[in-house]
Amino acid sequence: MVEDLSTQAFLAAVRRFFARKGKATDLYSDNATNFVGAKREIDELHNLIMSDEPSKIIFSTLASQNINWHFIPPRSPLFGGLWEAAVKSCKHHLIRVVGTTLLSIEAFLTYLVEIEDILNSRPILPLSSDPNDLKALNPGHFLIGEPLTSMPEHDLREIAPTRLACWEKSEQMRQHFWSRWYKEYLHTQTVKKKWHTGQPDVINIDTLVIMKEDNTPPMHWPLARITKIHPGADGIIRVVTVKTTTGEYKRSIKNLSPLPIDIK
Image (cartoon, rainbow, N blue to C red):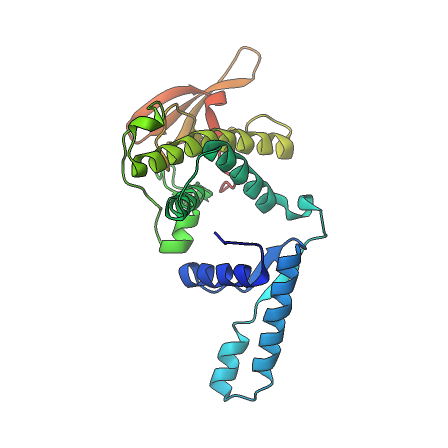
């Protein structure tokens, strides 16, 4: 979160990001004025450091910290691909959940960090090809070495905001954001598979999938392995048997979503 769109504010945000997540070697952004100005200042600082003839150790250390900045064409969000789509989806639901609610800086910052947590909890690909392994790799593994989790909370979505304390309102917004984004994300994954394969779903034995369930709490991704397929009389697969941590169940493929990446 920044107070304005100035170059200095953006540089401060980048420094906070690096302090929390670690140093990045490449940054990708559009050609917004504040981004271009930030790159110019970073380049000037880097050139100054490189011309001071420091010792070999300091020189090699600072040189390894150089940031490669990549810009997509101006007003061309399609060139951003997946990350532009992810930002758009996040902003869409964030705005609709907050609406006209006035939040303090502390409450809004808390809300943003919790959204960040939700986005980084999504499964990316199976951790192994073992059919008995129901674990998936997610961005949390790259950040802290293990999946991101959250404290269990009561479902507050149907409670009037006037009856909630300040921190409960923040939790209610988090639950509303999760409910909206979770459904859209699973739908998007199914559509992507259809675009790439020409089929509505990619169905294979031992494939790790996400089960579409109602009222799933934030950051909870019900995962299952396909153990059997049940073709209909016309040869089309509409029902499969999946294995979860609690047993095996038959499910319609409409209620299953593939992971972004699968291990073949």
